[in-house]
Length: 237
Image (tube, rainbow, N blue to C red; front, side, top):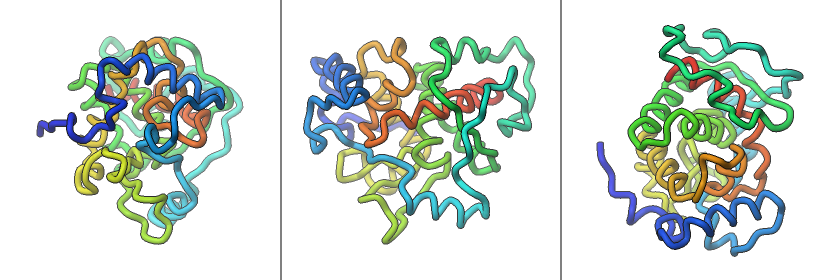
């Protein structure tokens, strides 16, 4: 299904003359030096918030957060990522997917069928939008942080404003209707189209690239998922 995202993306993300500003804003936010009001540049709230964590735990019967791992494992396994083995020649390597290494302690969670299907949807959209394997890693790491790869609907009294879906996008901030942002294909396309408008996103650390799009209150939290996101892309690409 094809969508016209021009009408839904926030103005800062669709003006070609502001691509560089997007990149600078993301880097500044990482350093705590916000250069624009949150009302202008905060399409997505931080995540996962307390209500989302509670909803995930209730839905899955398991804890949504895991303790950081001490050291990265040498190679991803199908069991660790929930994927199936593919010929090595068809897979990108972890080194290719994490060109700057991983930043800080890494977290990891087991994936169920629903999470794997959502990861596959993100990867397919990464291929379609041309952001490639590195873009897919950024997208999956972002969704791991925002929703633990669950396509969350409105959580009632626990909802963080009107955030919904894999990327906790907000209709009130211009990302689309509730029905659209809870469609994994639409949500991932909106995320990647905004990412493509970040000048030089391919050369940014993952957490900076994700933060430039998300404008989260917790900009460093995306970094902890880079290793698992890369492993997922290795298995499912």
